[in-house]
Image (cartoon, rainbow, N blue to C red):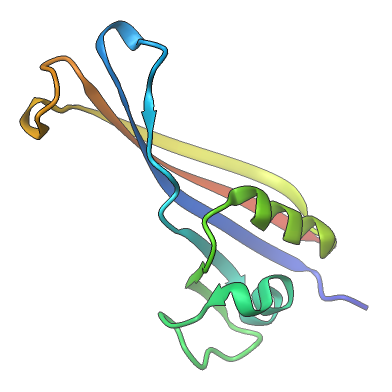
Length: 123
């Protein structure tokens, strides 16, 4: 049988919205997808695409929140989790906004940053 457990996928994002929320918002790509969970489960699901450099030699049954993926596509992460029998159990997102005139943009441009987590489980 396969081990049950949880894996959390997280990422930071940002985008700029110009005057009056124009339809041409500028999105930045996802820079890094983080992985939190038991080492053995993370390795089972993500294999060689799991970057363990921030927490090397972690014992298989211990939790870590220091791994990240070598690719930047959330859909790819979700596909791998689904293929391994995980289902999404919860998600959460936070966001903040700041005006950005000091960065060379128009005075009323706003930069939004967000952090989003998706929790997956396997029974």
